[in-house]
Amino acid sequence: MTDIQTEKPKDRMRSIFRKLALWLYRNNYVKKAIDEKADLSAFMQRPSARIVIGICLMALSYVLGWPAVAFLGVVAIILREPLIAVIGGPLIYGFSHLVFLAGFYLTGAEYSVIFMRWAARRGVEILMRMGGEKEQPSANMNT
Image (cartoon, rainbow, N blue to C red; front, side):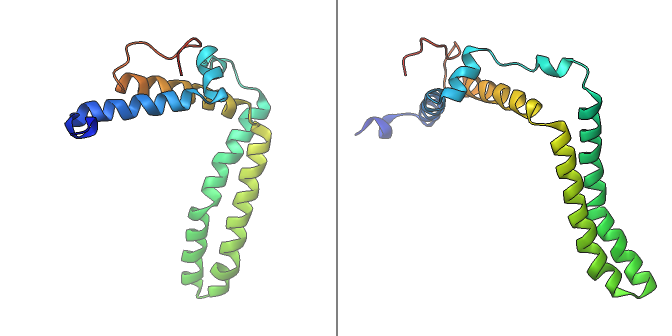
């Protein structure tokens, strides 16, 4: 019998989680995030007006998306004018995408990068814990 056949399912899962964590740790992005202990402290600072406006535009785009299309559909049914929904629906939906992109541009990628670095670090730490490791990966970890 091979090791895989005699290994308990719980131990097999731990082994898979540990191997996945080590594989992810080999990635320079993840390694740097762990070594620098990436955190979310940047979110504690007060956001600039540009970022607040960008977030508001992105939130508005969700209201302009499917809810506005549904509203136009209801109006088209009530007024018995199908062109309102046929033409207005795609137009308002496309406009909602433009509003979202404007908000995304104003907000910038700064916060996304901070969040993704933190998520990469936490994800590997959780995988290591699920793999039975007591300590988190570090720069001197044998990969």
